Image (cartoon, rainbow, N blue to C red; front, side, top):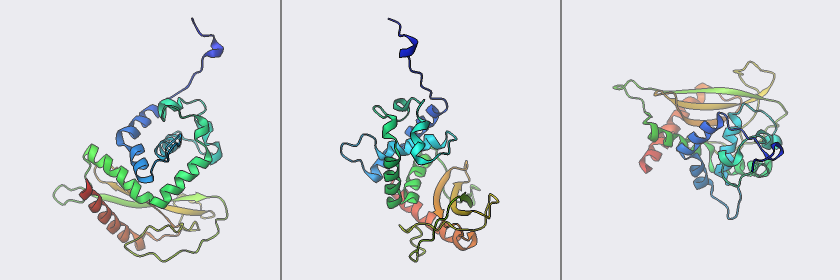
Length: 232
């Protein structure tokens, strides 16, 4: 029997199917779940939430977190994220809890684990070599934000521990997007000379000075990637 038009539901995938496949191929969901953990009886895991965030971010959508489910209203959510996953599961409360857990675990550490999966899969060079002529590239960029963002007192950080659970300072600084009237935060990123693959990510204060921290960031990257590669 042919279903009537009112019984037919059309859902789209578009380019998100390719992105979802790459996320699965790199094992991002599994890495997140292993690092964060899976709660007994939860309907959607932390890894699945991160997958949904990536799909949303690459869907060119910029809306408040409480409107997050709207992005998937016409998408084949079960096909993209997982069987039994529906809009009501992708709510601001669950997303907020997952973000808090990732922050507590260390975003830089988790990002590096995911990057190393890409390194191993695609045979990406991670070190500078005079013989092979390969280099790493380190740079920072700024992201302007609206709002007051009152300053939070921070503890002193050491060279050995650039990441702490103290929040970054969102404040005025040199604006790469030419909005000196707005407060901002920075993103430090190291990419491979072999293909420009992101290898190391660190969110930083809005008034961070590149010259003052780039050397420390390079040392931290070398230390972290050496420890990580020894485990592989």
